[in-house]
Length: 270
Image (cartoon, rainbow, N blue to C red; front, side, top):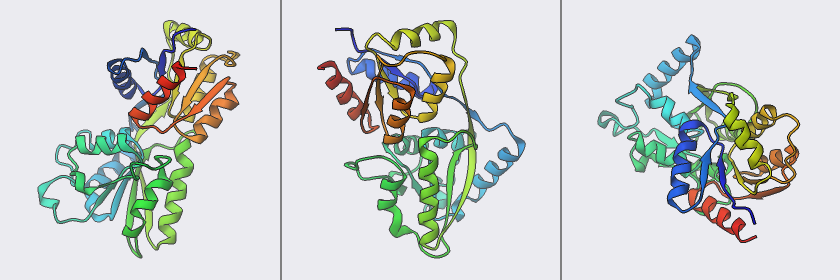
């Protein structure tokens, strides 16, 4: 049967690292970023980010929606308030919806003891699982800052963030948002278009970690038949987007690297 190559669709920086890690694990992989990420350019958003950085110690917690949120929040911020020794007594927590975001926080210098994330055995790494761990932290008057991307097309995380904000409000807290990056559809090169067309039929496994990526893929290849394509989706909402796009086989798995590797290897056996 055809070799099951992994097509990594995460944003460029993440896709490159995932492809390298998969290759190290013995899985053929190639990066095909389907979301372009950059820091916010709008002056108003930049000003809001500067204020959030200066005042982050006033929040009960900062919730980072992704590793990119961590990267762009701390980029150009060499002495992050969360990690600075002068703020060691401040109770500001850093919330991460999954292990990748938690690792990004540690890489940024945030002490592991300040980071909260879903239980390792959680069925999903998302806002709902995170809330199960952090709910006891929130009471009347507590402020939470959600660090995310600029407003754009709805993604699988958007409804989760809104749900989390409602839970915080119900517990008596308040939620504010700050945008630290912007998302956009990529412009695929001719070589990337050929790769995508081949991967639609050659047995490759599309690693989908965002329903927005599915939207961009459909826009980049209008009319493409996906009925012979295999998708590995890291959230039920992403799986739904892949099925709506016409992917013939859609498998769900947790987003942790080891789970993704195990799922790809199980597909090899089919």
